Image 1 (cartoon, rainbow, N blue to C red):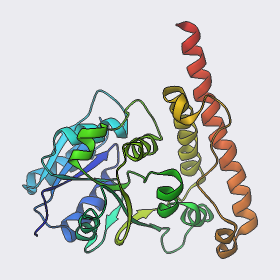
Image 2: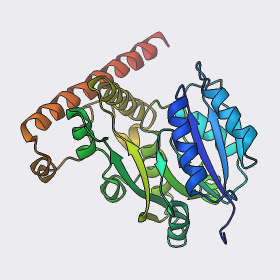
Image 3: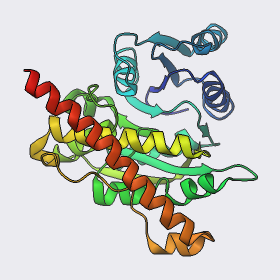
Image 4: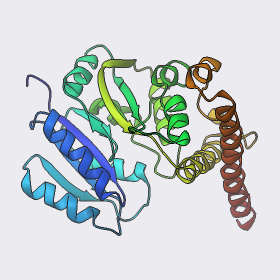
Amino acid sequence: MSQPAISIIIPVYNDAEGLGVTVDSLLAHTDPEAEIILVDNNSTDRTPDIAADYAADHDHIRLVFEREIQSSYAARNTGIEHTTGEIIVFLDADQRVTDGWLTALVDCLDEADYVAPNIELDAGENPTLIGQYNKTTGFPIEDFLEYHRYAPTSCLAVRRELIDDVGAFDERLISGGDLEFGNRVDRAGYEFAYCPASTVIHPTRNSFGALYNRNVRIGRGHCQLQSAYPDRYGRVGIPPRPSDIRSQQYDESQGRLLFTLLTLIMTATRGVGYYRECLAVWAARLRN
């Protein structure tokens, strides 16, 4: 593989099954010259044991730990500290990569500095209503890049020199760290690119509880962004809406009325997380 040295960072917390899915797909579809850094974020289940088994069986897989800060961004930062590659790829545990995904992603880095692949959502053979909704509204990567100037760190490729220049992730954030990082990269003048030739498969959230928790977390993260970066994200105000959802997505979905209702519910859910976090921020400021 005539590519620069590549490091793939996978943060994981209490997801032994998801980690296994991801690493097995990497072993099947990725050249072993790319090092894989598994970062356990202080899991309390069998995840560290599973990760250790992979590291013991494969020379190009290493296991490191982030035990001090419970944050996927802190885990990614710890991973960065242990990498050797010129190219750094972030990947989430629970995803599957496809044949040629990494070669295509690296090729796209010839034309840009910050590259996101196509993320295909998989709702399974008999998807629930929530799974269908998540698949319809989940990852409009091109829109994220064009309108919001970031890509999710569920899969993202950058050059090491970019991180050396702009810094790593803000590990204070519970959510929105990928947005803040991407915006910081954009402000520094780096080139962004979408790489449709590279595909990563991401499972949908198939239960109301899973989708609810995600939107609460996003709401909390938005308040944290405003608290930490008021010049960039504004002061405490109106909570964020769900990701860009267009009417044609509903039209194509077979469930427009129900999807509209779910969108309203998830908007309110983000508000719950947002104001809950803001109350905590205000209380901390009053104590100080």
